[in-house]
Length: 111
Image 1 (cartoon, helix red, strand yellow):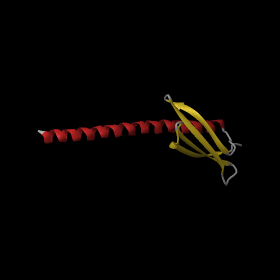
Image 2 (cartoon, one colour):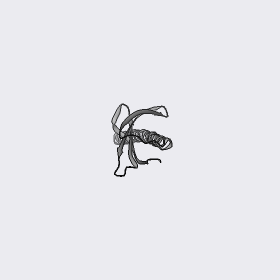
Image 3 (tube, one colour):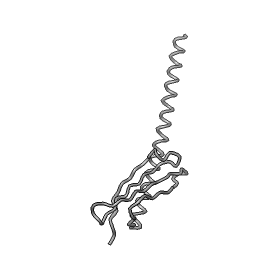
Image 4 (spheres, helix red, strand yellow):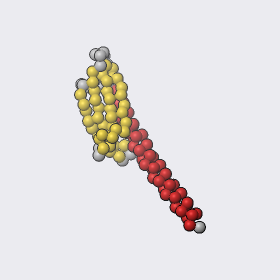
């Protein structure tokens, strides 16, 4: 009887740990999906405005599904003068070093 009780206890601990890991992975997946929306929104806004941003670093914040995200846009020149490279990274404001999403694109200069 004691051996059966020990086996059940070990199985319950293992299943609890698995459920905890699954919940953490689900939250991380949700944050990465929403961060992708933030990055795509920033990039699509530049494309829709036909913007020609100056090289440099731009930062801001945006909210998706009630969660605040910090974004950073790094604009750099390319070897071809008619294009700019734009790299957008998104993270949580309290963890700016933990990048959730990175999006890189090249914007053309509109005539």
